[in-house]
Structures are given as structure tokens and as C-alpha cells.
Image 1: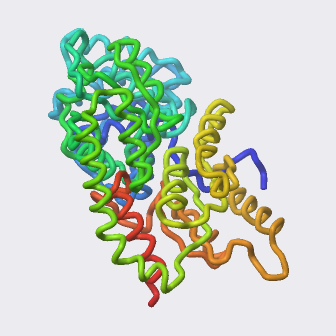
Image 2: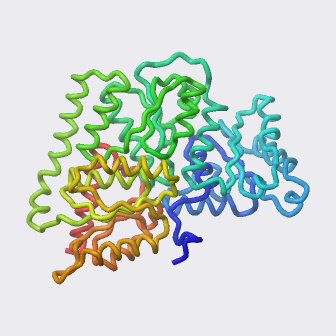
Image 3: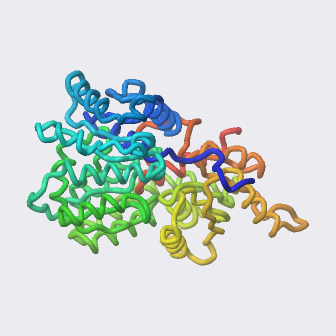
Length: 446
């Protein structure tokens, strides 16, 4: 298989990541300065790949776009952009308008900041970010537009609130369960006395973004994503940040809360009480399915395919809370050597006997080949070393599960065989939901 292309990619371009990030903000509207079809294609990929998110106010096929053609490519598209901004402001009622760009307009060198600056000078609520698709994938687009929001929209000079934090690194649609995860983490952190700005839940208001400079800490739920925005919060608004892994299940979530308490004041007695209450809540349900788990021998070898955020979070939950044996993990982000090292270091924190084979690969066929080679090296006269197995990945990985006669649950982008609304896998309650989904899949044919 050639390494010059990626079969069945697991992300969008930077423009797609920026577009869905804007669309996830209540009463924000994107103005896309790009060629015809860019906004529509990006929106379609996000909607179908993220559990059928659906269309909301002024996005989808209604997204304002300049749709530049040959004339603008030759003579420049700045006047067309100004025309589109002017008409969008006149027709569409929104609290924030975000000008984002595609490959073609970035290549021809349109000065979008100057064009947008004329409207900003008139007091129009406009933010601009250059997000040409070639600048990276969905995560890059999220970081580019979020950094622009921090620079241009977040108010400066506000007094700090000691118990307020900003939550970054959970990328809308790229994390298929982003809405449920953000809401669950906000609920959980509120129980230990923290105010949390999550920005992208269905119930977040633009006002919380504008006043997010009041936060005392930014928590980035990723080792590789959201770092640009976190750095902007630090440099512009004086907010330090810390990287903590996305917590799934009781073990990871207790560790998350305990480590967080080292960076922001949390009453130890309150923390201990919350941990006890949430842990008891989790096991009050798990203990009733433990008999099913044991009687049907539902322990499995786990194959996890997902981005840097989910691959570790899922693997840790399976190993430390669910009693499974992680065999191979494919991290599907395109990372530089430093990013790979940070992710690998995170996996090294797992108990040595439970550390899986770790590969960094995005191409679907090459992930399958890597697993085949690993299994072939360990196969013996008694059969496959990973039987019975279970695959947690994207819809693309269902054929892989079928090849190895393994169970399968789609949990990472793209997910096109499930409808996702408020489901969450983060935290104690999210871990219970994940356990329920896995067990339900295993017995679905009974």
C-alpha cells in the first residue's frame, strides 16, 4: 500500500475543523471565503461522521460562502469577501460572525484580515482566522479558530475568579461525543466547587466565551490538541494551563480530579466525598452486571483505533476498570515526533503487563496490515493470540473486526452507524455508559 495517500481518512481539513467549531457556538455564524463546495462538503462530512449531528441555525447548506471562481482567483477575491460579509450582516441575525478561509483564497493571498478589519472598526462582531485546508486537519482548524477567538473576542483585563476554569481539547464532531462529554465534565467539576467554561455544549452562551479571561486555569484534555489556544489564553490573558488526559471511568476520573486539585483550590473533604459518591454510583450498577460478565466469560483482547485523546482514555478504562487486555492501539492523528513522544509517554504510565503494542497510523489499510503482522508473529498451533477480541474504533474499522471475528463498537470519528445526542463516555457516568454499550454489543445476538 502506497504511503503517498491516506485511505479512509479520520478527520477533515483545517477549514472543516474551524467550520464545525464555529457551528458549535450558539448564535455564531461562519462566513466561508473559499471555492464552491468547500463549506458544504465539510459540513456534510461532520454531520454524517459525528453520529448525525444535524443542521442548526445558518449552517449546513445555508452556510454563507463567497464561492469564488476563476475571476477571483486571477484578480483577487477581497471585494467578493467584503460583499459577502456585508450581505451576511444585513440578512442573518447572529451574535458573532466568523470569517474563515479555504485553500484557494489562502494560496492567492487575499488579505482577509484587512477586509474583516474594516467591519471590525465599525463595531461589527466579527472574528477572522486563516484556515486554509492545507494547514492541517480538523484539530488544526479547531486550534486556529479558537486561538483567533481568544485574541479577538475574549475580553481583556477582567478580574480572575479563583474557582473558574476553561476546558479545552475536546474538538466538536472530531470527538463524536463532545456535547455529552462536556456536559458531564461540567456537572462533575461543579460538584467539587468549580465553574467551568466548556464553550461548545448546546447550553453554552457566547457571553461565557467573552468573559473566559476570568478563569484561573485552563485545562487541556489532550496532550496534542488545543495547545495553541491554551498558549493564547496564557500569553494574552495570563491564564496558566495544564494538560490532563480525558478521564473515562472511576480510576481515571479519580486521578483526574486528584491531579486537578494540585493546580486549583479544591476542598479536600469535598473532593473525597464526591469521589466516594460517584464511585459508589458507578459500582451500584456495575455489580449487577458482573455476574453476566463472569458467567459468559466476556473478557476480551482489545484493539483500539482512535485519536490521541480517545486511544489512551479508552485503553486505560478497558485495562484498569473493565478487566480487558489491551493488545494493539492505533493512534490515528498525524503527529510530529514531539507529539508522538508525548502520547507514547502517556501510554507508558499504564501497568507494564497491560501496555499494548502502540502504532501511529492514519491509513485504514495500513492499520489492518499492522495488526495482521503482529498477530502472525505471535500465532501458534493453538490459533490466534487475540481470540476472543473486540475492536473499538470508527465505522471504517468494522471490516477489521469482521476479519478477526471480533466484536465491534464505533466510538471514534467517523461514526456513521450510530445516532449520537447527549451520550457521554467521560467521567464516572460516561464510563458506565461505555461499559453498557460494550456489554450490549457482546450480547446483541442472543
